[in-house]
Image (cartoon, rainbow, N blue to C red):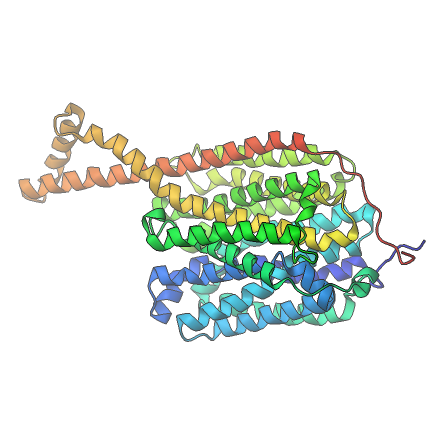
Length: 517
């Protein structure tokens, strides 16, 4: 029996699909530093500008798990080309948008195209390379997934500073056009995709899924701003989210033609890997958000310099992809995943030991370790998940894996925004007791500062300025300890993930579907 092979070299096929993946993931983070400029230029508030992120993530989440059905219905190549064209057109309309509503609608178009590009690209890569080289294919895909969020803030800051926020979208145009041209030239569908005849789309399941994922993303993105369950609308959104989730699970398990095959979670390795992918997304996006915010809010770094500070992660990832690509077929993948989470935990712990007298050099090593550890997680984790799956299951599996990783990333960002405030309030209340007027050390500091200010101001004004200075220091210190607590929590999450690899079974590689079948 002859095993199917694409007509073109797999490395040539990898070029357009990786261009598409990199664009899609990059746009989740490239506009973060440009939000204040977007709000100012379009006459929107800072809170309204965050819908530029939320709309993209919601559209991403809705289309991700449904990508397997659409690729079977339209053909994987045709669907990928259509998604890339939609993403590129969405980028164009984002760049020329004259109002916030137009920009948000354009971001939805971008998100619908970008969300499907990730699982489609991963499935095409895995099928184009022979089974013995799937570790290499996964490493290549992981490079785009891991490096793009790192590059995004730096590239976005540079484009915004040098040109305009609109160029964070216009930059996708030449890349998208090149990707579409190469896809039409070298990408092809395997026989079982061409022969597949999916049933009617499960409209009810798709609607429930969209409602669940859409409300979940809005809850995660807007929860902290709305003071969580203190807001009546958020309570209703939570109720709708929970009800639609339960309805979606019941519908997909009982219908004959589900839009998402949830039975795949019966596979133990896939279920465990999905859970770890969610935690990996949480840790990755939490760290990417925390470090630039720490440098900007407490150290006075510019947006570009703060984004540039995470560049060493990209260097570490580039080196690690080469290493893990060679090791994944020779070393037990469970060991590699454990090493990756251990490196990420060590990097997070080192960041939790920073102080306010640090220099840029203090964060180079933790970032290199975090970047080096990420491919050690992504590549073997994918190998463990797909090692017991058939080729026909890969489209569904990659869509679900990308979905849980993205949801994990959204939870990570929400976790950061929420607990930075909560931890800071906790530390502020604990430290405020030392500022009691009858506390001798406090009286001594107030007296000393008052005498300094009296050289230029009246006694009453000097006393007020002394109190203001100490209160400012209190806020600075409470915020600093909040950052350190969160870095430590991320380290603990990663350390727990090291133990979770014990739940994996060693995968047995499933042969590819052949033409004779």
